[in-house]
Length: 426
Image 1 (tube, helix red, strand yellow):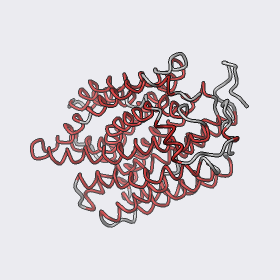
Image 2: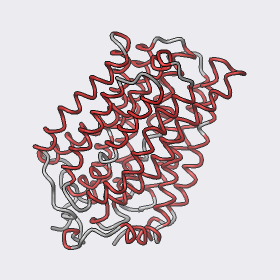
Image 3: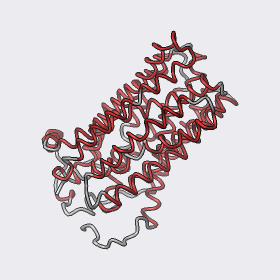
Image 4: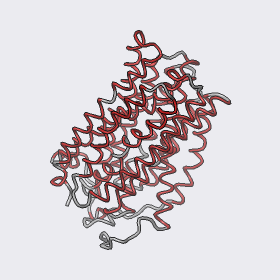
């Protein structure tokens, strides 16, 4: 089956709607479990006596080590066997390990439990990208992948809301227990109701006619596509700032504005939910609207968005007015997530259908090892270094310094856009 030629084909039908709903739901739990530790950092630090550097290692590197390392072999398996089975097992495992986080009594126990969450989540994203590519034709993939990516702001916001509420009303440990058990319940429902589609059914080159390639062949293919590497490094730089902000902004609102844990969770969760949904949807719409005519726009649009975040972050972070901070930070939160739909869609078009999951995993390896592994730690370590001079405002200036990563990301995206047309598969 080749891609339909009718431009008027609807983005969603009943089957696609349900599949996207379930994929978004699983991705929501992925980010609830990934980001809930950000809002819980305040009571965890007080209870276990951790430093900001230790919190950064626990929140970033502990998760990123196995999440990135196992992502590629799991994705290679997903290019060969059922992607829905892999996602079901992954969801069960990361949810179980999230619940185990609630049992930790010291830094190393919590570090080990977060490693386990990373092991599970290694199988959650790259197979989903591949599934979306086989449920939607090329002309609709940026929007479809943007809808899928809504799990990021929704899951992050829910993690912050639920974590802050449960920790304030009961205990931070019960926050981990609650979301972990809910994910375990969802796993069999996903497996029983989401069908495995034929690979490459909307592409001219049918992946089902060829055996999935080995890792060496994939890297030989990617070696001829410099746009892939520039785009991956650019996304990684943006994620250093993005994941760092997801983790540290709740603590910033507590320290610099004197909010309670519950108030900080409601405040930041609302910024992330409203701004995140707007930015991700806008990115997907802009990518499909303008990228079809000129493919370089899949990258120049998010590059411009990165640069536009900087003045808004400076105004919002330096402001001492909480209301002004709220409305100003909505803008860069949206702009910082515009890249997701266009870039993830572009990855699917740089390789053949039978290597999409693995190529996505290589992209995620670079993006997350640098973004999650270093971003959260870097802002935390910088905050510790600035504490002697700026006291409770150290985190404020640490966040401002981190905006340099958006400048680097924009530069790399502009460079990649110049090669995108040449590197496009087929």
